[in-house]
Length: 89
Image (cartoon, rainbow, N blue to C red; front, top):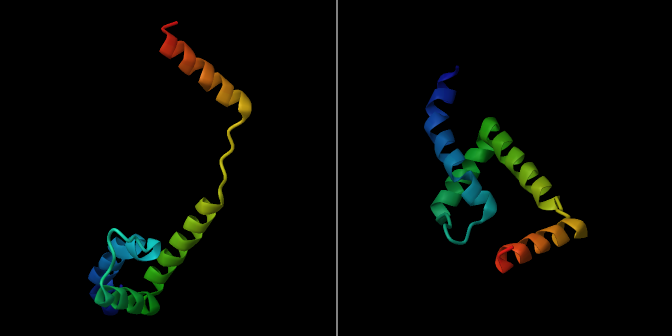
């Protein structure tokens, strides 16, 4: 391990702990301007953190494209079960 890698480990840890907050643009927990700059500069310079960031982006994109489909038969069975439960059967 190179000295530069050891010295950047705390920064990598900080970036990874704030990465989802950064990528999701969570309005309930926004990063400050200084934190945004810190994170963006580090990702630009650190191949490992850049790779983690890209993996997260790709995973997030893939998950957002998934569509769930519930067939009508399942809905009917669930509805029947709820009717039986609420009617005391």
